[in-house]
Image: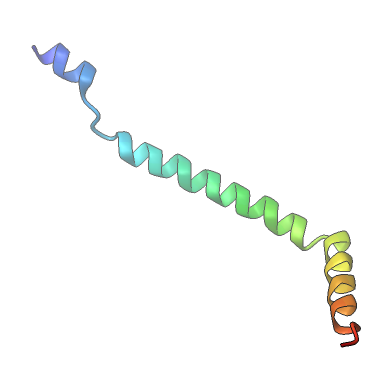
Length: 57
C-alpha cells in the first residue's frame, strides 16, 4: 500500500516544474537581450524609424 502511494505521488512536482520554467524563461530572456542589443538589430530599427519619419503625407 505504501509503495503504491509513493509511486503515484506528485509531491514536489510543481516546485521542480516552476524551477525549470523559470530557468527556461531566464535563458530565453538572455538570448533575446543579446539579439536585440546587437548592432545589426539596432541599425535595422534605426533605419525603420528614420524611414517612417521621412514619409510625406
